Length: 389
Image (tube, rainbow, N blue to C red; front, side, top):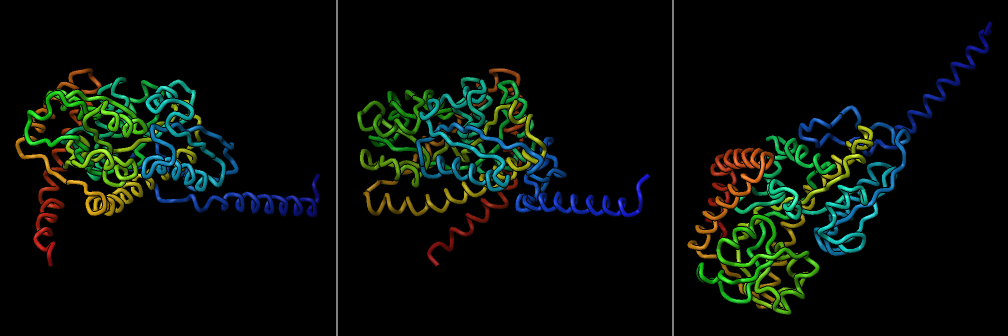
């Protein structure tokens, strides 16, 4: 039989033990952020702030489609890795491999799907060989802007369809950045009419490349690291990449001077994080929340950085490097729009999941367009009238 003194000592020991546990839980208080899951079914808000000491330490490998230290794309992957390590209080460490370091840039998807790497960072249209549906989760011609993509993925059924598509390849996808509206590309010769596209060899991936093919051009898919040499050696006649910030870094202006806009092929280019599904399913609810919170933050920060830096870089290209900024004619844009509708319909007929994704995408785009006509579009049109004031 225990005496009162022994019971008191035991109670005191329990109190001290609880205090140590609570102190340990407080270590990760910085990770207790507002949920950014946007209604995702696999988001467990009760997990926020759960003690990191209860999770095993993880060392993960991330492969990317980007050149090493490349501004905005490669650096997004690196920044995300640091953010996840910070939010997890060092429990989750991610080593980032640039395209070609561990696997080829376009081999990132297979590496993660097969479990040879844990995570990829890239753009989903690179995987259209797996399913045409992947294009809609990156960018399609005359598709959605960054804000509209966020709305579709987070609140209009996009994430659920993306999960359904990717589960077949043992991957869990998340949005992780957006480069915004891209430029139309660098062209060795002037593009004055539709005939000027005939026989043109142009680097353009995804459904945008299919539109170019219908215009009579020959689209090719090449990773960013190969574009400068291909353009310099004349292996391609034109290339799109991203926008002024990244294009300036690649030095395309040293080869050609014709810089066309708008980039109808990629109006809101979403970057993505893909995790091996076995790795994802092994995560605790707390670890999943760390990834969802970190990628949501990175998605916003990357888009903001692209907007700020593109604006400055465009001035540098024009004023310091003699780049000629040119707009595609209305004739060309109208024809591109017609062909884009054809291309998306053809892609949607590929299989049932692509049709389902396309119908959801199209409905969300129509809804956003109706709203934006009386919101942002109306406002920016009104604001343009005071640009000289």
